[in-house]
Length: 402
Image (tube, rainbow, N blue to C red):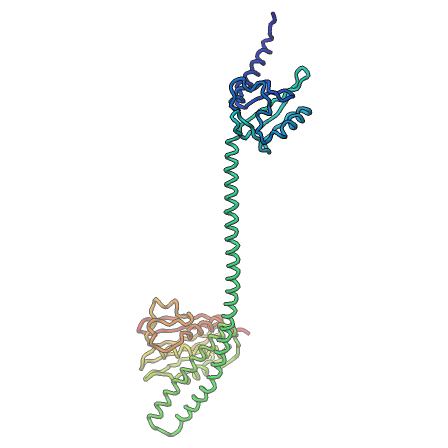
């Protein structure tokens, strides 16, 4: 009768419990591949009844399609046994009693007893894991396909965008050519018209100075002078606007008598006065100033011609001009139709015309040109206006330095 060591007995019981109740399948085989022990989880895993796996060979658990190489792999392992985790990077499959296959992960270990080597196989069914991996693989394939489709769409869009860019460049080039042609035409037309208009205007003035007092001749001469003056103003506006748009307007400073220049403009503008209209000129200060003479002349012409156009007959227009050591002030006041308050903010825009002047001839360029000239000379322009009462434009120009 022998007495067992209590500690040793507990260890044996623990090992048996681990073997019997492990959730992994555990199969022990000898070096010939015959199964000598199998736990309940492995029997359940392979579909065998209790102790039915004993005496069967490990090869019986391998799918038929792998049988041609498994015995050699098993013998190689037995010759050089070592702990090995398998299945992480391999697709391993096992065969149930009914012949069906399922994916597994197998870890191998070994032990020796009485000079004989036994192999321990730890087996896990990874069917669910494989399903998830397949789903992930399908999702990745679908994602790659979508990325490929989107990339293709993006490439097509980029090609189309490049084509559009080329077409736009071509259109812009053509537009530039048209603008150049327009600029050349406006410049040519303005210069070509100026000479005959000046000739007509001077000839009409001479005719009017003759001793012929016939009322009809005088009337028609006045109408011709008015029409020619209007045409000259329009051409001047177009030429000035074109130069401003192309950035070809430069300030050319010179000393000149601003009072004399104002008298010349008032005299010239008399040709377009309506019946009963008068221009009152008021001057105060130093006569000689240092500005761009042509710009100042165009400012006078545009403001006075606007005042005449937008004022009724028998009304007076006032040009007030003053200078001091630091500034020159220009003020033109009319008693005309005025400017609607809601349109004040747009008044200096190019081609803009207020709603209440649509039946009055004009280009919508004059005030825009005046504002550009004032800006070129670093001045300011503003106005006060009341509907049907009149408008006053005020310009303040600082003393210019070379």
